[in-house]
Length: 170
Image 1 (cartoon, helix red, strand yellow):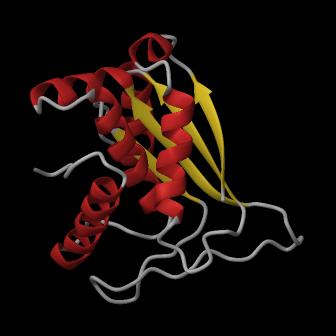
Image 2: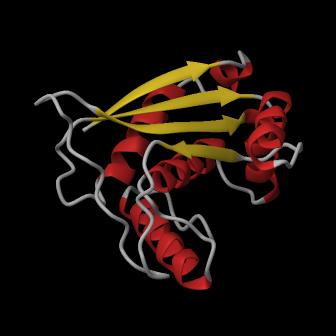
């Protein structure tokens, strides 16, 4: 179960994608479905911002002061011990029934609009994919090695197709 704290920092999001709240909830839930016990409560914070804000964050945290589509800050290091391996499960809450905070995800409207337009994809589908992607990073998935990238992309593709959105890498 995903509890999504959506912070809409740039007002253009409501105009470009009025259903952003539902998209964020669905994408987070899709990511959590990869867990063995996906019924446990988890909390994720998603910031819907603009290119200026995400470029500042990218510069501060990755030393790349340029806009990007999605950034994530996992609360836990769940990375697998071997390339292409299965990430560790997130910890259980110390208080029964309380959600475990998994981390933060930031997405940029202008970058996602440019990418969706260039790929001739609906904005909703592209946003769904990039929030899913960011949430999978919170769960320990990555694309630093070819094995990890193959595992993560296959998972994203299967998840998006199952949800009726098509292959995000096609």
